[in-house]
Length: 170
Image (tube, rainbow, N blue to C red; front, side):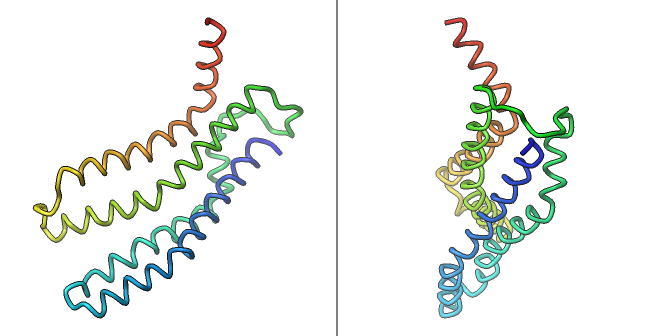
């Protein structure tokens, strides 16, 4: 298995996670729709309730369908073409950063989508008075949950090299 194959496998696993998240959250979504239908004040919220789950499902399907192209794009400047002969400590550490970064990134996606939908809905309804300091802090927290894992994945090799160089100097 080379880098391209591993990247495609990781993207497909991410896609499966997202589709699985949609399926596991479907009962809660249906419950929310039922509650909104019975409560006239919340009837307009049905679109927002359904859209969060559908966005996650749509992203999962798109990732599945584009996995080979995304894998080639991720490793577009890579010189590796054949099978890897052996894993070094650096390769294992980079793989660990990938796994941790992808896990953290994937686990943050549903929450980020929900936050974006909720924030957008509040702004579209021109109810800025409903946003409080805590809402903005939540946005900062979710942004960190999104960008730190992305950084771990995209710069894993540089992070490992930096940490290895620091440990050799100590």
